[in-house]
Length: 509
Image (cartoon, rainbow, N blue to C red; front, side, top):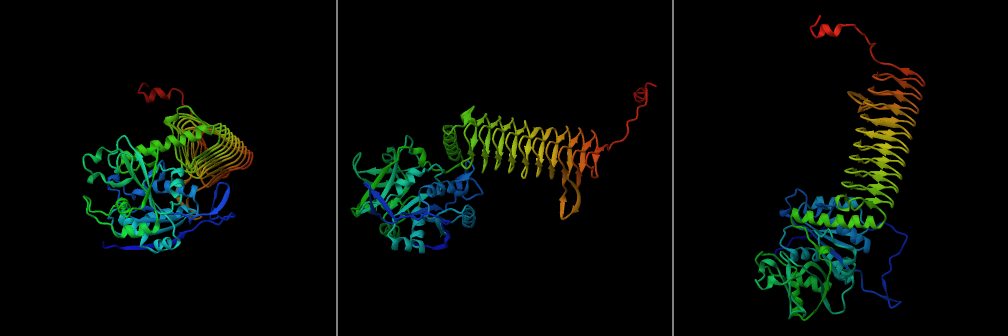
């Protein structure tokens, strides 16, 4: 094989400082004993993913709003923070590296380039021939190999596969029994339930082998020296002309080395994603797990299967969620809140006892305790609604703060505004925050409405402008200048009535 294997970044994201010291020892039968070194991890993240038909690298395609690769790293960090990880990257490698960097995992992550995608065995060889691989061999760490497209993998599965191999074992193989094994490599055993002889890939399987429903799911733990030697001697004499990691099983058998097997009873946990249809299936399964977790924690779903909630969302108990609700990103929901049908909240913090009515959309905003929002309100990024305020139907906020107990009842737009406490905003109010002028380096201008102001219906403020404390603005007014405290502003033309003139307009007189 003509390999190009090089380490891209070494130790780029080490663990954050912690007050707790990790001890390299296990408890056995109540007694402490020295353990083998921590198991290292290789994640295969170099593939093109052509069938996904996406501009994103395959491992960065989101499932329930979070990239597949991050779902794996999240679980790994939960069960084994500080683990040494090598991400084998190739297609759009810089995009993958930069995305992982933003997350700042408490894992020791290195990156190795697989410049040509020649199969799983080739990818692992690239990792083992890098400086990272040399350090792994020196430390005599077992190596867990994971595909980068397993968004449903669980912490329990990773924990079991991270367990050190028994003395003399070459590898541990994870298997699953599937009703439809199409697309997976089949496990070939000696007899019906004997030792594993090999894995045969779908395209290389005979008709009889294709009838087998025990499959390998591309998850292995290897003894380090066996892995390094084995991938260096792989051949590509197969239909795909690729170097298969599965061929290491036959190598172990020929050398009479022990192969440990772990049969996983939940096939969904190891479901891979190879096309948009499988992506949708994985998203449905992951969403169902998320909803179940919240429901068991005290969240009431009126219709459990109609809502979509991303994994980073946090919801306190005693929250009621109606059908069609979507919660995304770092959204936080306080206890006692009710979220009405077909509402969408993204990266939004919601306090306690809030009522969010039908069709409300909020993004990167903060909603205080006992607030009422909607129906069909729109909180754009940078908005904050303080305790006890009311944002009514068809109200839009953008970079606006609404003070405590203030009411913006309906059909209004407030952009780049600061509104105080106990303010009443009438129907059809607009802050005119953009007029093309550049003031203090900005083309968007601020409206300030101080405490206890009353604004009548169908009014506009042309920013920058201030309505001072306790002032009144008459309905139909367009305010262009400061209104002093406790003053009444009327900015409209006087009504003129011409008796009988309507008949003239109709041509009747």
